[in-house]
Length: 264
Image 1 (cartoon, rainbow, N blue to C red):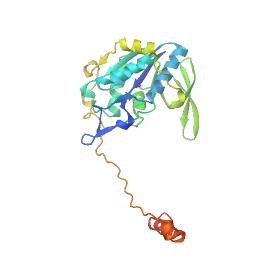
Image 2: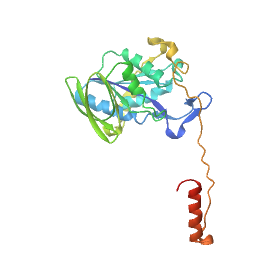
Image 3: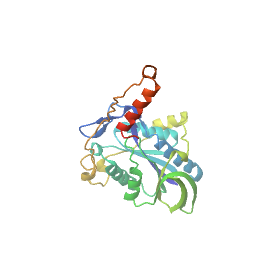
Image 4: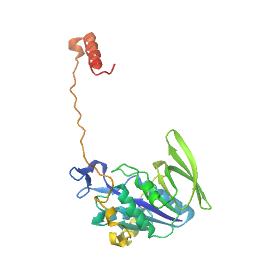
């Protein structure tokens, strides 16, 4: 099997910063990691490779430092990594990002399955996987919690849905997004780290792909963050000291407060 895993380098959750003027995430000077939910898609692909043979290629779009995320995936056992990086890609929304990744995947030749994380922890949209499938005209199953079988080019999976599970079948090549029930990510081995350190990671620029420059970056993105607001929590509470006013008075004050707020 030839498996492809799109991954993303994201800021650690506690380090997320936003450029309020541009409406984009600030990535410079912020410690970044492999999107935690992509670790499950990597593990899923590696298990399929162990069961059916083949190769696992990880592909990531981001700044040059995203190479670190690719090398981590290689240290877990992935075979190849490709970095899509160009200033023209900066500020791309999910649609523009999916467009670039889809065009890059087309250059890799035939494949059997794309395994994506269900979402990224920075944007939290869950859109890139389905958009890649749409652009490549692939069957898709989202929120996959278990792969039941792969026989004669037909994949049988279990999806996590609201209220339970459902089982679906579809033909390959295809794309799936996986939830954390699918597997438990392995840790990189020492040998894996040594191998990853020496692997060549091809860098793909805008001019290496047959893409429309007007569909890239912030200007080419059909969606915009027009305003960023920080929630303000204002609590003008009243402290009722039962020892001073008595339980009866405290209860009366509490009931009056709830009635004023239309809670009762």
